Image 1 (cartoon, rainbow, N blue to C red):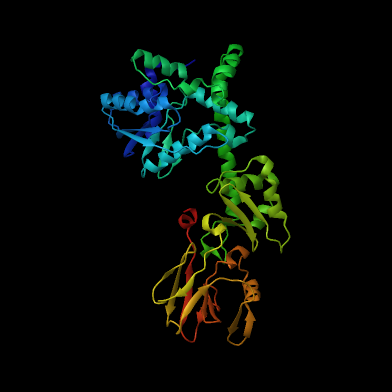
Image 2: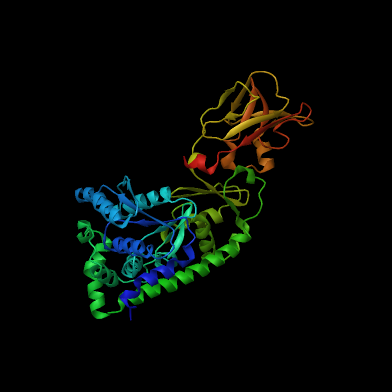
Length: 442
């Protein structure tokens, strides 16, 4: 049995109770039924409740002519309620799924505007959750996908909350009718070529005719699976703890894990742990593409396996797996002359170089490895650079990025490698700050 409709405001307020100290509650306001109810409900609660500042945001996707009138409608609704509105125009990049591309653009805008500790509220409800579960089931999703839309999650510097996930579409329609609300009817919601619309208009009516409680029970299943996903994440943290060891090359600033502790786990626990680790770095591969992990794990010691994923690559080196993205996947441009070694040198797509101590004399250049380099070491004479890098276990992917300091044809130093990074007797050292994740993503 659904709760009495008159209780809807208090039910929503209960869901929002832990967030009463947030600086702003920002409502994602499409102008449709669901977000109109949420905005109206909160605006009226704010008249007799001490709530954070309310703001609304409307995303204009520019995908259909009818949408050009929606910002004005949303502005008039917000003006009547005394809620400031921000309209954001986004560029939807066409792809295999227009629905997904629009969602990516929308949530990208949400992340951009959500400030520290702010709360973004979206109006998905229980029927949406059931549709999500069935849609993902038909796509072969695992536990993570079948757990549906989370009630709350981190969003940029703030949080996203869905306070209506326990509310049915029928309850929202009844509330809107009682309060004589007006809203936008998006013509694209009737287009059956979109998978969710097909499920909503063709599949769910048949399901609920035979099983009237189908929406409620499917949403309940999503809640069970969400709990199971939480347990899997707890297990992943336990398994990852033993793999998050210190590396001699942590100064590279790249995410990495020790492989041996992971390899001892069952195949399912390996996938669970690695998936959890990769979630913050890239879109995860589907189950058919996990053979890339097997190849990476099982490669012989002298191999240099690479697993290419959506936003980057996993490399194996020195008994570890390393995540590379952005400029780490490109060969750095030629560095050239270091005209003033007393100041830091910004290397194109390759961080920053500094020289500490007594700067060596002569015209200096920065180069990268091409092969065949030789350096002169105290007490060891001339040594091949490749052999020296092997001795120190420098990861293969980093060797072509290590800045080399030259004076004419003489290799003076290799940045950051003890014993090769300068001259102890003359008292100078070459230090390299590799490109950061932000630089890589840019």
